[in-house]
Image 1 (cartoon, one colour):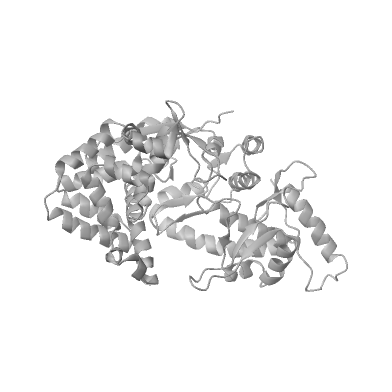
Image 2: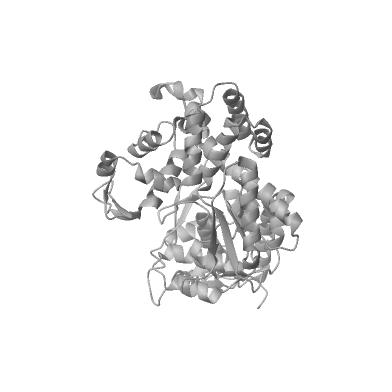
Length: 494
């Protein structure tokens, strides 16, 4: 393999059109002319917009990503304006202005019309830099940023990140790229997926531990689920061990600790929460809940739902007929046909359990002022102590101010309060998986490969049974509720 510093995946048709336009622009300009356009910088600019977009959850072709000009000028050697104007003029990118009210940077998106001017079928190729000095400059600047993130992750998660720095993880990139190119994905998604494959192919690893959710983010967590099947640890097949219905399980576990008045475990978990605002809110609720009578029956009912049934199937079985008639049509025993919200949209088939999972997660993540029919259904189905705990975690005094009288700062505090509960569940999950279970396993088996994708632990097939049992037993020790652990082999479905 030829050594290169930095790898970029680019749509072949977009590249061909860009190359022609850059050549035409530069044709009558002297090599020292400041108006010349560098293919390296133009390609990188387009790549970086796509890269930042790939990090946005639920992004679409219409999504603009806001990137600070300071960052772009660093990579483009203070020539951002020149390249932005050139790419906008020739319709490779589109921008939205800086938002002064919220202090939000200029937004960018790549225009797909250029990639669809097909001379040949779209492919997604690795770009080779023309100017090696610029490539080195780019690599060094990006490395400075990446190394800060990596060092922060390594402070507490080196037992996992150590496996991301060598050649332990390999990908069958030829089969992976064939899977992408032969799939019915949009050009936008094909580019994103091809890029994620090439990064692992060439050992370009990124990882960080977010203060927001305390999770360990890496190339693996950002990769499309189906593509993970092409990854191995050297020659060993991998398997992921997932906590089934993890967030409802963790919620049930926390409430079980309150029911049992297990102050020592509650305090232990509270100290593992890294976000001060989430930790303070949980501490406040601990004092309130432990000092008042508790609805033990409602908590026990929820725990039974978590341990003896599938919570999402239970939600589906208890949706009212009135709700089903107003929101969706039943297509058959396994799917709902979801009615469109407007005439411009088309209805879609959704598997029932998947629909109820999204409804459950929406309830956990939504505002207290969300009065949709789906949220009302969840509140009706859930036992009252669950509803009360979720409500109290999201509540803030600004919600008591009439909507018409709310100031910008009130709205901002309400928005922050809304996010506290999902952050809480994510931070508890991360603490248990990253700082307790995988750390203990690493001390027990220092040479055993391990990786994580949020609530999943990934190990080689030969360690599956041992790690699965350890995960199951350790979660039971902490929460006194038996978890369900699902094994999933990473094998391609070709």
